[in-house]
Length: 101
Image 1 (spheres, rainbow, N blue to C red):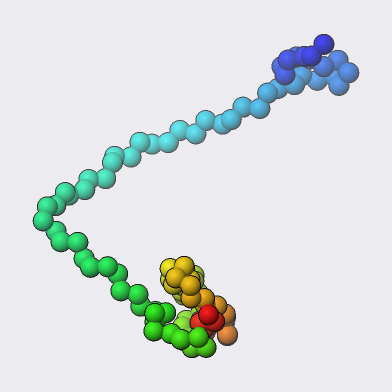
Image 2: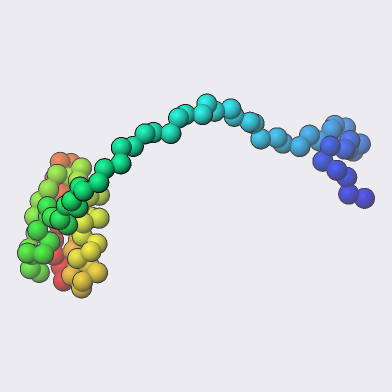
């Protein structure tokens, strides 16, 4: 016969206690106030700070190694257009991106 979780198991000699999640009380923070403005023009599209569109196969440029994630994310839209790039760390401070296709 199946026993409930809180039942006494004679063969083990102890009570089984179900695990309970701890309740955490948090303070309610007031919602931030935003000023709604009208008539603000939308800026033009962001200009890419990396020269992927100007690169030919075999071209490369170097950049600070701590910007690898930013460069890798910026490469993606160009990769979807049939161009291929690779990003490699050269030294602890420098990385480089090459156009390979």
